[in-house]
Image (tube, rainbow, N blue to C red; front, side, top):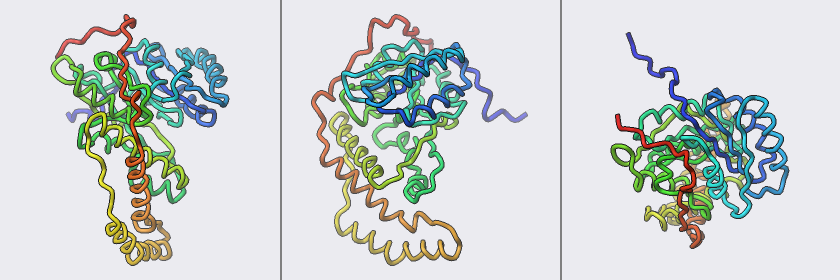
Length: 342
């Protein structure tokens, strides 16, 4: 008989789902519906949504959601972090209030599929696994920029799991064993970007599982869906933030900075696009009625994103407070004992 490649999920430990939220009035309905639809056993999960000083109706929406989740037999805790404007500080607030053996992170503008949490927990059956990165897929989009990002697979965790310095998972879809984060401390609360890589690297390099350093695994069936950027302004902001993250992680961990293209290299790309790629893309559109993103806008969009990242990397300056680490709260008495190696 052929073994089942994808056996039925069988591992359902206690887990705390943590979501930082800043002005999430528009995004929350989709997220809350997706969380209510999760297939994870209701008595094994709690949802901790942390308002990070929102100025819209986020606090009221969270209070109303608590009653809806309670009616569905689910534990839902609306929390608040107003002292520090940082998603990592908000996540720390959730961690300190969490009762689960594992932590699962996503964001307000994400839509987890119904089996997301179930699939995210399965790799933790291996007691040596301290981190699990689920996959991030794009919600359907029709603009050229959305199609470009889809073509580049911008959101996929494949990129972060193959980082040349050390693999990591984005906090839009990340599971962490409480035992692992308790060893290395919480997120750096004053960091504004790059905190997902920082915590994953610290866990793998400073923490210790039952038989060696903690490992990270991928859970490709644990899917979160997310919107791509739809405007040039938002796309620039996204890649500028990537550049800032590079600079911060360079200062914190010594990773290599991304090399900027020289003017001659940029001019060569533009010339090739104008003389070769763009005419081919237009011909494909006219005669085959197909949009060849790699030809129509791919090269210039690559330059646009690369320039934004280079600018962010150049202008970013790590705040001294962002170097601060915060110890895991020793007052938490429900940290599960270290499992035996098997």
